[in-house]
Amino acid sequence: MKEKYEVGHLIYDPTIYDGLNSDLSDLDFYMKWLPRDKNAHILELCCGTGRLTIPIAKRGYRNITGVDITTSMLNEAKVKAQKANVNVNFIEADIRFLELAQTYDFIFIPFNSIHHLYKNEDLFNVFAGIRKHLKKDGYFLFDCYNPNIRYIVEGEKHLKKIAEFQTSDNREIVIKQQMHYEYDTQINRIEWHYFINGEFNSIQRLDMRMYFPQELDSNLLLNNFNIVDKFGNFEEVKFDESSNKQIYICKKA
Image (tube, rainbow, N blue to C red; front, top):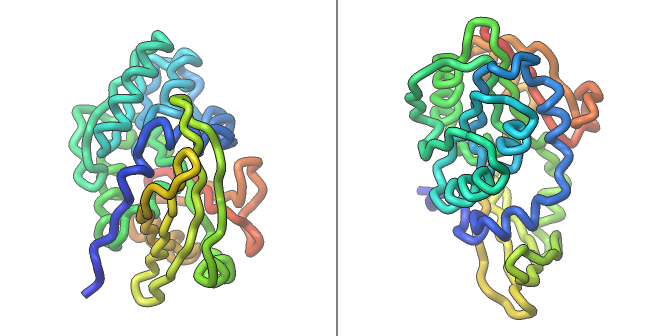
């Protein structure tokens, strides 16, 4: 029996999370696809610390909801929203069992978050919840990695530094990574070795389910979504074998 899959607590430390992800380029992409009507109802799943939710609210969208399962991340998101003087409805919930009070014009899952849905039934439950909460002509968008087996195999050979940055609370962070891929479950067992202020702190797990392109295409169709478009990066280059990302634009079938 396989060991339980998980994400380590330091990975969800809000200031470390924000420091690591300060240079991402996905906001403009998602902003482009938002409804023009600023009264549209928008739902971000796996919203974290509000990295995308809050800038969207600052652009004048009045009905935006962010859902996440991690209390510490949501607490930080609420503080950031208050500082930004915007109203966002943050909800703590497991997206596999989504039960919200309304439907939405636009639902999105950014930043590779579906990789933490480790079983097919988890993914299907999320897709079913999205269908239930998405309006008839609404859009469902998400992004994830295009699995690169060569990269994973190289990552099994040695520990490699992947990040070095300073947090807003003045901690110097270095992260080194090593991986092991389970070919039967498609789970990439990732270990992040954290060094804080020059000293080793801990090893944190970042287990991720790899979803392959034809597999995801089929799963979306099986769950009654039409794929409107599929890109290989946030500049909207069409997906092909060289793409690092899988970025989906979907509607209900």
